[in-house]
Amino acid sequence: MLLIYCVIMAVISFTCLLIYQAYYCSGADNIQCVVKPALQVNVKKIMACLFYIVMAVSFYIYTEAEKQMPAKVFKYLLMLFILAATAWIDLKTRKIPNMLVLLLICIRFIFFIYETLKEPDYARFNIIQMAFGAILCLMLLLICRLLARNSIGMGDIKLFSVLGLYFGYDVMHVMFFSFLCTAIYSIYLLAFKKMKKKDSVPMGPFIFLGTVLSIIII
Image 1 (cartoon, rainbow, N blue to C red):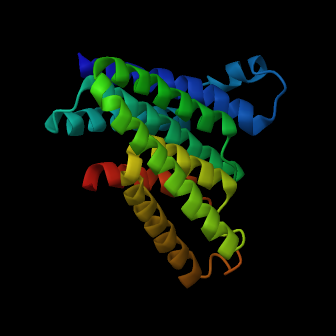
Image 2 (image 1 turned 90 degrees about the horizontal axis):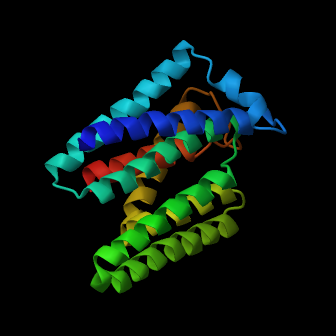
């Protein structure tokens, strides 16, 4: 039953975020103007929807093996769905929408309330973890931005800080894998002269990839 819920959540999340993506990228004044075009079926959208479903099924299989609670499965799965959409938008526009960052914050606090009601004794530790993860990311990345001008965008800093709310101090693993993937891809582009030293690459896709690797490996 949990698997069915994960698949349904994948389809609903993909549909909603597909509409938002079309609205954000088109710059339309009214979201109703992009609903119909956004829902028109094509090969790319079918593949993207299948990707969401495969991600949901894979995550379910992984968490089932780890005996994770359903609430934890839904929390991280929703986070991954939104990160995937954020990665795609960042790849196309070089921007991370504040709306999706706020959505991630809202989802985290909804699950925090649930976790607090279920395990009140765990609430204080949870708050410390969330605050530590978010502040740690914010401070470290702001320092990096100051030391190396424009080394990382503010959108990326905000996204990492929000992930700190989800992972606590384990967000360091997310940062490590994200920067590692970014460095490998940048070296590849430089080696084959597909980019110059002054050019930059969007980090959104690598933050998503780093998050997935962190969940699987760590």
